[in-house]
Length: 132
Image 1 (cartoon, rainbow, N blue to C red):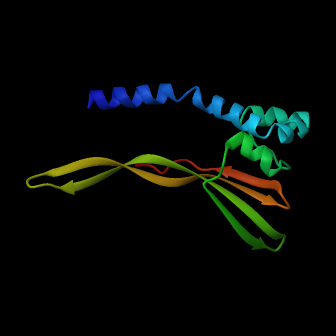
Image 2: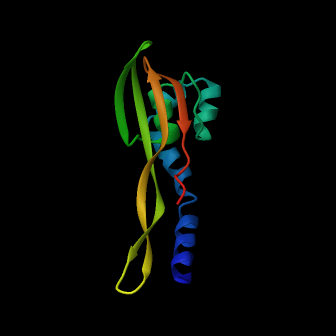
Image 3: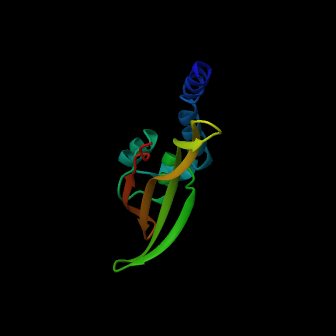
């Protein structure tokens, strides 16, 4: 058990620098769109934050490619929704030959959604991972 906790801690620490590198790569990939942003939106993108009025390029640079893209209609018109997925470890229990066993499996959930109308962010929200 200690080995698994140590391995998980090492993987978590190894991934700390990766988000900044990925953001820099996305910024370079869409450099013209990034440079066209007003200073306040550029500052938000640089810190991975979203603001209403951002375009899809700014959200892509800040948060990356969405896992799903949905289209929906509302009274206000047509909207595009970007969904970002996350995962967590969920405990599952089962009976063995003589006693109850526990195991942890990876489970997915929607961790964030961004709503666009006419190509601009109108709202967004982040969601916590479900409890065990």
